[in-house]
Image (cartoon, rainbow over all chains, first blue to last red; front, side, top):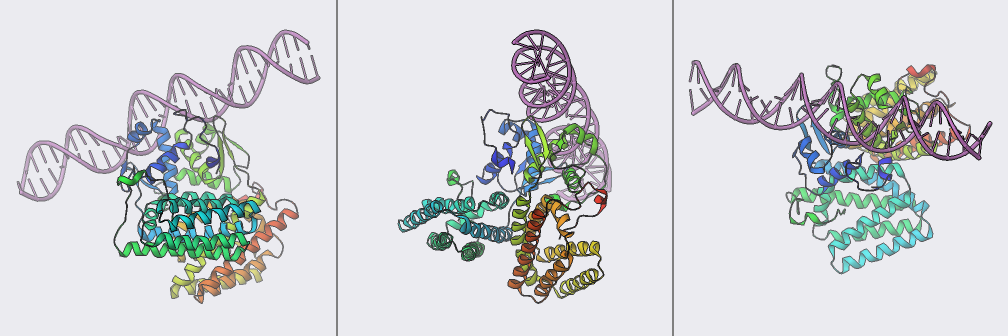
Length: 242
Length: 242
DNA sequence: GACGACAAAATTGTTAACGATTAATGTGCC
DNA sequence: GGCACATTAATCGTTAACAATTTTGTCGTC
């Protein structure tokens, strides 16, 4: 919690109380550290230019977060996430984001509703134009806006952590054929419900949306493997979520 | 995740990779470390008989969990939880435990259903007998059983962490007049739905139950303060949740 | 008596070194 | 050639010491 709110102040090197955790998290999300990879404390220390003690602490946090596993005296490994686990995580996200959508519907101010409508319009335009990247980015923005409006600090915190576990698959889902179109429709339904102040409907639509993501995950499994695995040339792309 | 599964193997002192985190967590839950209290690394190290480095790592994990706050160069403090935050946490728990209840209804085996029915009967008997302590304990057992049956590892992990944040208030809620009776009725409704395999109803009843807990939290706020604050003579009682 | 500068103490953040445990390698024997 | 066993290397876990920062306490002045 508190770790989320204290902004990176000066990037002053080796003033890394907890912010190293985020750096490693991002490295995993971006595919610089691959699933199953053995993480040696000394290597990470030199890689991130911090003390080994700091690395040790960060690894414990990441272990507690489920991003890595640690065996006594055997070191840490990036934890591979199976599709079935990604499904489970998405099921969990569904109910939590559903809660946020409901709260957002209750609490959104006039300005916030207008903002949501604007985002929705831009997203639909992007899909019409066939701009998948813009869709991805806007989709994430919509989710984020709803979470902010909901003002449920604890829920947002949990969601932030869950995100990093399933990033790998979110990449792939967004690239499935026909996915942007369907996603955009679902997002519109969510936005409309929130803007209309219908909490129950907002929750329902959000959950429907994420259940459709789960369906896409199963498709992924059926059609064998991942599209656009991180580590490939396009790993520079920003984090996007379906 | 992995941290949950590796059992305390030999209690061999100073073999504390992560298990120290749980010990500090429990100390906070039991009121040995009070909200707002300043946590000095050296003191904790001698208190738990571990190295300061281990304490440092544990504090970072607890900070990430939201149980304590850490200011640079100023140390750590046990994070006080306001009633409004406890409400927020319970709202979050409601949707997650709702998910677990639904999954449990889908997945419970015949044996598990029988076990749930047994627990329910014992809980109602305890309430009839006016045994508040037994009710508390059985209530927690029911919740735990449903979580196990649901087999949603990620959700259970999140719930386990959320629990520690609001323990303080859960104590008080269970002591509100008339609370055991109402809680038992709600638990029965949940169990019946799960046993009947009605996922939607199970989720609905679980959420209703926790919304009723939220109502009790507001009552607590209205009637001013906490009953049975930890640190009082009865702090030896096991953790109980409404 | 209150306020501010200064010094001392306490605490955190960092680094380096040591011992312990585990995996990997090499050797001898069957 | 393959397997049991000792040796070596790599890595983790711990401890102690040092540096940097904050807090506390003291003194002098207004």
